Image (cartoon, rainbow, N blue to C red; front, top):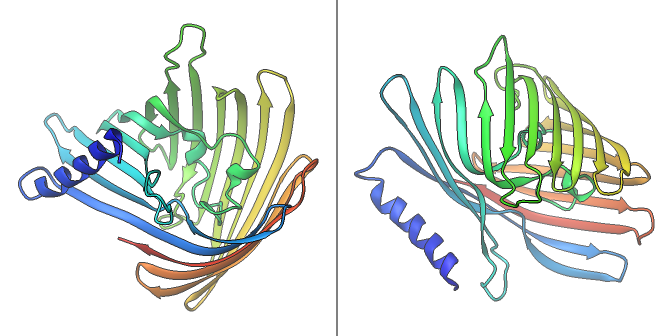
Length: 302
């Protein structure tokens, strides 16, 4: 285990041991592992996949002057890495303040454009994750993130990314969102967002999701433009999830110009925080061999 991984493990252990005498802290995580049949154009293989399993600590504490400090330190854990040398890597890690002005976060964080997807991507973290076809799914270091207070259900968000290079461009991400992305406090969620100079692309999105009884419907319109070449591509995504007792049936279509992906899946609830799942994805990208994946697995959250 290299030095950075040793330091990460030490930090998690220290946070856990300090929880009894420091400010409130929460240890959380998700284990998601599947058996997957993969055909990426060169023949079929069977493999075990750890689908963005993670471990994290988070907390918040009231301060003076109606302020609150909050922090998150999260790591990706690969439960299927054979050597164990690459099974630990950084995810969102930041500290910030919340008050009447809104929330300011400093550190590594998802851009506000990425965050506007909410739960519309029904196959997030799998092969059909929207990042497979689209630009814009960025988690950036050197980030300053701001979220305004809600005004009649509307929230403004901004990300500023310092490039740390004399010849680089500082990147920005902006969003305006309405409603509740978890669809718990409202039946509607909608957002518009744009990235500028973000990893070589300017990106725009419009996102929408709603719930009717046991049916959840979502859609995203997407455009991306390469700053280097000027090449612009437009795409769309539609998703649906329908709950029947302990079963959730899911489907999703995604496109980018002439490229497309279709996925169907099923989740079965085994407990409050545990589910079994299966899904099938087919992807056709112009100029490459068609790809297909079939998976079944387990997920547990804590």
